[in-house]
Length: 355
Image: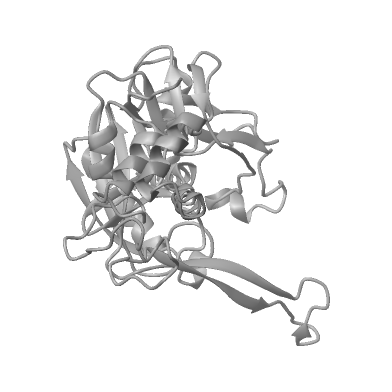
């Protein structure tokens, strides 16, 4: 399958997470609105067939800082006692400082492309944290340490909770409060009349990247569909100005890959097939999908799908075999049989130290 990367520049706050299944839903509605319902039906029919390719596979969205991709931090085997003792030597055996630093690293959500390229053939928490404690990488999202930063591991501002001039923020979250007005009384409803929504504001310099694998799908259509999404808005609260963005497309991208992989990092919300994998380190979450497009305006059907258990991006999966995608489109998730749930992931192949 051909590969491309879409780089998104947010122009407004986002009220929805940049999930792969939400992107896929927007793509489906884009096909219907820009082309025809018949073309959407043909597009979706390809996903129900057992095939080594699909028309289009998409990752979730992740941030870029200084044009460097950040990937979801891998879920790996916890450190054992021997590995902890080995890492604590970088702090001269001062256990309190060491465990405080370790706790800070465990909280990170992302991992930089540079360190992933370095560790893709030997990935473990021990090797990842060692890169930081040796002073080569910053503890914040495991980015390459800035040349101007002279801090050692012991006096690193991030470990000591002090202000650091080199840390670049990705985004901030804010609760926006709303009133529901009763149009008859012109007053706020007593029950549920006052509520808040969470909005994510991305820093001006931050970009969001997503990968798309595609086969038998024209790249010009991908451009047209994403142009449609960019001006109509992504996710919730589009009508109030949320989710607008600019974008650019890069073709023939090179994705990090181990020379001798035995696992993959999940890059999308993943609903696995029965025979997808033999071992895994993973996080799971429950997804209750909300209807969009034409379905969102129908009062005759429920506006939410049935709950489904998904594997979260960053999980590491040991598959039975290696291919371009894993997972499935889930059907029968709603009383209306036309409604489906996207659960296919793009894999990032690595070699993991399991034992």
